[in-house]
Image (cartoon, rainbow, N blue to C red; front, top):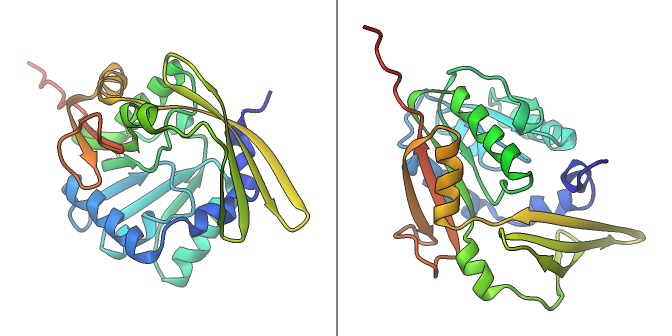
Length: 252
């Protein structure tokens, strides 16, 4: 049976995603990724999943060698066209992020905007382990997501409605489990088109995201709250975790 994320992004949400962040905020986030990962011109960086290339493209524009991976073929096609218009040479790959097979290719990788928590706990470890193998030894992986501690204190159980990119979005709370997984019914409509999608996403607190990354083999995991970037507390709306692939022991 198909899971919600296999079709959701092919629908009206693509229009919503394209309009959620303006150019100024996008650039701020791209520069934050660059600063936190200590990226330098010419380094190879993996954006996974990359969506429409919102952060991939400005980072490439600043001299990074970017690869973007996303499951949604329409996003990859639009990202390629956008990069082409800016004459940027970016590799975009259509793939399930759990199935990537890169080997020690990247100087850094990042997963931005609550693009984790879609899978089972075992599959999330599998994804993080795939990223670990994609990195060169000693290089870092950044995850940015909503902070479960903040979300549980501020979660709105009443339906919420917005209009973004000409799409009316209604989010209706359906329930949550003890492991932080939240179920929401998203109803999106534009003109005569109406879509109903039941989304299920796990939220993580600092200890849980640290355990996930450590279980995949990352070490020296650092946690931050944001915005603005600082110490992670239960009052931080979002969290950033940065883990390092261990340097391999030298043979004797």
